[in-house]
Image 1 (cartoon, helix red, strand yellow):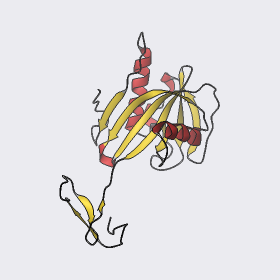
Image 2 (tube, rainbow, N blue to C red):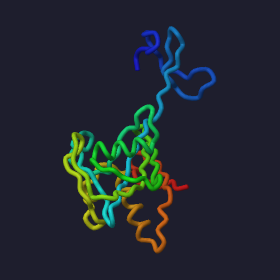
Image 3 (cartoon, rainbow, N blue to C red):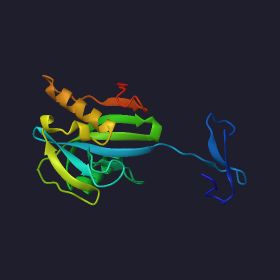
Image 4 (tube, one colour):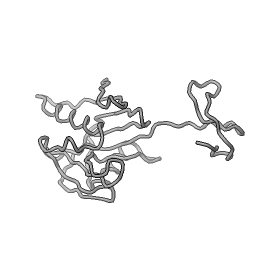
Length: 187
């Protein structure tokens, strides 16, 4: 950031009085411009014994598989964002079960929230953001072609939890940084 969005003057990176982090502060009007993590919301859609994945038609990670997810919009809840992204990317209507994974992706200032969801009908399709959508059983997952470590983690947790005698699908919290994409900080 170079200029203040309030008055248009130059900003400097400094620690404001009473704060503990560097912020962009306007040299003219004193406005403090906070930059906070972006929220990504999505679903892990389950139909019978299969999960729905989308092959990305956009960067980053064009051509790789992912769960339907994307950036939350102002004025919507995380649940609404997850449902909207699933409809936009996979043309699928799902029923949310519960929040399943929360991943703090430290190196890109994002928090990803994936909901476990039921896909009652096997109705889905491609979109502008998706080359292909497909249901996969556990042994068909293209593990080497998954777009993001957070997606790999969510799928691994799901299949491990589902294999338990009494599946409970506990909420998983993770903190990820480069080189530690699968560090589990579960609570």
